[in-house]
Image (cartoon, rainbow, N blue to C red; front, side, top):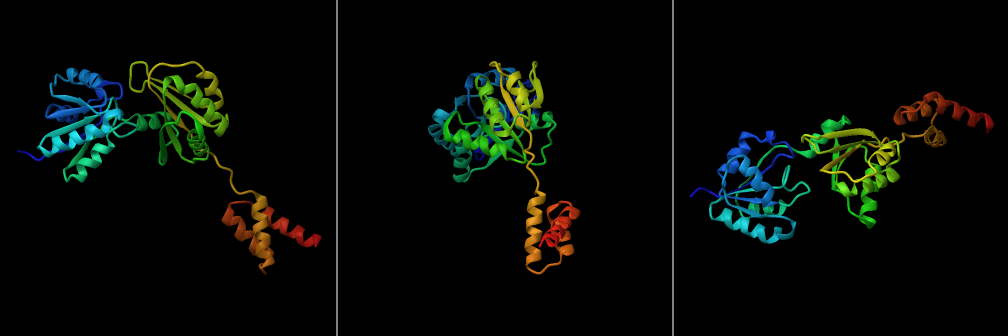
Length: 277
């Protein structure tokens, strides 16, 4: 008997043309497929003309199903884990199964594939050398307020999933925290026939997306443009250097280079100090 294993598979987020040959072969060779929604996965398997046993693994039964996954792998079975779309464990169940199988001493591998997160980042045009992913925002209370406040100060692009019936609320609260001029991209039905990408500012987005929409929604909030150091802060620091015995010229030059402000303005402020003393 071959050694059991768990294979975590990314599935299309909308377009079945994104199915890879590796995904097809992995599903066809599985002893059992654990799916977030067996009805949706059944459609995928029918499309591929694959007939393998399935069982559900979703948030409500993840703990008990994880034990079953480990038992199947221990028996030497090849277990495949999929979610409704994209990669399991990314705002979807599955992480517990990955940990449990690995802790039991069995191999875990991944079949990569479509991702709403990276698709949205590429489509937004905001750049993604650095980005953060927040998943779905908390529905209410302090947790929601703190999460949105953190986004308002994030200097990276931020990806957020939004349910269709909460999109308007999410955009309104993001505008209140981030300001109406913060850039945002609203993507709906990524990779599907009616894919939509709207890019603008949060203030406009609140008006544009007031009504409930259909389909899956992904937001990309542009990086925050935090204010740089003020000339007042630079002058105060230069004054401290002068008070400790530094020359006006050297203090002005050192602070200006360090803080990225005008050396001339710092120098003139220090000269004015001497003239008024």
